[in-house]
Length: 279
Image (cartoon, rainbow, N blue to C red):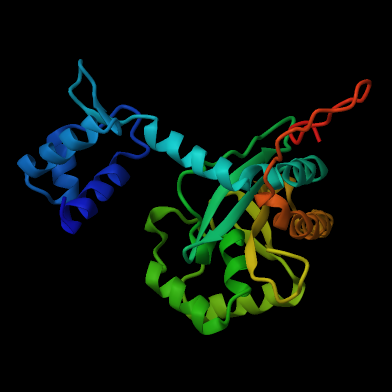
């Protein structure tokens, strides 16, 4: 398979992501700007590998769970979600709002874990599949503020200010406004987005490092988000305090994520053997 074919296959899988009912072959070819025959060949190859299936009734093509299975296998091998889930759960419990953990990888932010703290009333639960719009979310602004300004602006310009329709009414639309927000984020240690990523939603986020050394690179972000009526300005200092405590805890445990569980040794008679899974 040529490099161009690989690129087309990856774009095809991206086009099928988030389409639970599948997509008709002709519509898929149209979306990708590919010939019908080439799209059909690619789908056939992906189907043979188990990544795509065709619905026998509608003839639409959709992704199987194989891609998700591979992603979870990779996450498990790196211990990424488990390393922070306890901290994330505690943050959700303390704030009673929706919390997420994102990691920095390949110059991007990728959400890998979440915890729901809201127990009554409105429950904000956005999808995890799409990454954050960097200039219009607290998560994105927290990470951008940790970078040199020139690098942060380069990344934002590479993505564009339009947000592909995934922004709220207060989304930033120019570089001067973004600079001001990033300066404020650096000053106070956390980012705030009020109806920037989504109408009616307030989000707050901060970064955590890959270890306790102040020179350690930023490993990811923690965020808290919820409906505007439940996250008014007067409540935000308490949420910020919980967020910063959680980030400190995450920095402390993050280096442990790669620790391997050692084979259990035979315990002396009468002793209780403790395994990594129960520790």
